[in-house]
Image (cartoon, rainbow, N blue to C red; front, side):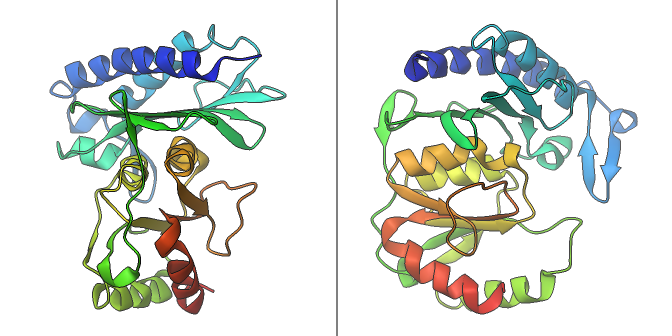
Length: 264
């Protein structure tokens, strides 16, 4: 039986090591160190170095676990458990020296996250959750907001950077929300967005064309903080990040219906 709380505490320490590496390297790399994986999709040796460090240090915690990591530095997959890692969520922010950017780590049991951690690199906040253990920020329990309607909500989202097939309805949805909420924020790091939903700073977050490593830890943070996390149809199982809606339970249904009007 895995002690999820103990594992999460160890993950926090490991993330601190990786964050130290990222901070040290942040002023050393130049434009020649930037690689392009696709349209507006970048990676640096800092992403890869952080991932290699994380894989090396996480491996002994759960020896039977494999890895699903953004930069593909390990191809080992576990039959039941897998670490899902984004070694530097918000690479474009990092390249431009704009915060936030984060380390996101989740331990998955099948398709269910059982431990999750988001660490704000260069900041002072670490968000942690484990199955049936609640969500925590720097050791203090956190909960989603109590906002009851979209009209009083602060909304977070992200803009597509290389998949534009749904851009028109997405922009129509944004226009609708701009006129009917307290405002929309775009931080550039989905894991931080989800952590902020978990602690009540944002009332909801939605985005499409994310990946599992962007959302796995945040999924658990939101749910353990009392919120809901689904795709745009309300499904809760087998989520990969293609469609993401996270909100407190009071606003969720209204936002789900609103998304359904636009993002069909």
